[in-house]
Amino acid sequence: MANSRGKKSVLLLCGDYMEDYEAMVPFQALLAYGVTVHAICPGKKAGDVCRTAVHELLGHQTYSESRGHNFALNATFDEIEFSTYDGLVIPGGRAPEYLAMDESVLDLVRSFSNSGKPIASICHGQLILAAAGTVKGRKCTAYPPVKPALVDAGASWVEPETMASCVVDGNIITGATYEGHPEFIRLFVKALGGAITGSNKRILFLCGDYMEDYEVTVPFQSLQALECHVDAVCPKKKAGDKCPTAIHDFEGDQTYTEKPGHNFTLTANFEGVNASSYDALVIPGGRAPEYLALNETVLALVKEFMESKKPVASICHGQQILAAAGVLKGKKCTAYPAVKLNVVLAGATWLEPDPIDRCFTDGNLVTGAAWPGHPEFITQLMGLLGIQVMF
Image (cartoon, rainbow, N blue to C red; front, side, top):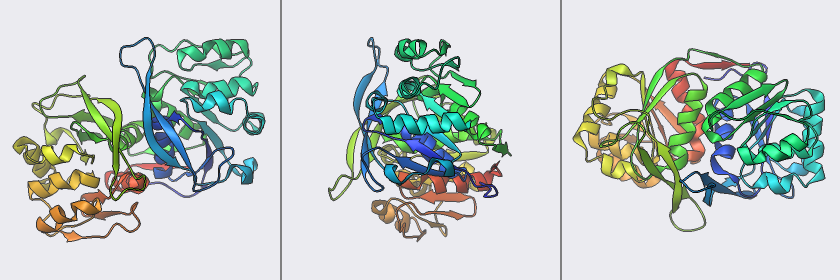
């Protein structure tokens, strides 16, 4: 649950082919914590879309790239008054390459830098900091190929020990890649004056191949940023194994499109997993729930969480698993609209997700319809777990 006293507002500096996770995870995590986030891009206005890129290390000499989700901006770059904001977040990807050439972007960054307000920049985002002349004498890290630009701009380069490394120097927070989001976001919240209470909860994610990319990673990293212990398991897989994910998006067709997403690394073994070791269960959507709903061990695990009245948060197609587990009878819930059939047949009262980001809590059960609802979805789960971010 977020606290609205001393409401904070931050800017997210976007561009075409910014890294998909590096835009959406901080955006939705901060919204879930009660921060106002305005996503802007030069030459675009509120309602316009930025295309994103999925960047991943797949064993080649550099990362691969494929198309990510379409990211909808919610504010207009030319109307921004920097003095009304408390901080700035700069995602990486390929966008910073060209944004670093834009004087209006550099002026904005310098304004934040000169005022001493926190700036959190990740991966290739530090190219913009270098171009703005804001890193002279500052300790910085970044994705390693950004090193020469930072060194030439007078920064004190800190080699990232892992791709999750983050560095703080004064008001500047830098991270190497999206693997470091939990610490990166936590450091930014702290720099904004935020304090986290009620954390250290243990949360289990029920994963499968072709679960929706955002629907696993956004809540996963948002809860890690709140200092929770979060485990991800998948039947027939163990810690360190990967699940491929799917990017589901709306691009004008009668149903969603699918593109390949990031590979998601599991953190625990499915075999021997015990509901009594965890405080809550999260079920992402996508295509995985369809086949996970046929697995008796999965259904028994879900029943155990529901019967013990521990918080269960399920989104999109995840409710197919709840329906198959027989735990929805007499419950009020929502889901992706096409899953209404499963929900109603399972004996639940259907709640229309209008708009699509509506989420609902009924007792220990939080349900959402799709990934645009993540901020509310995460906030409602935080409420059940007694986690607060106070500003």
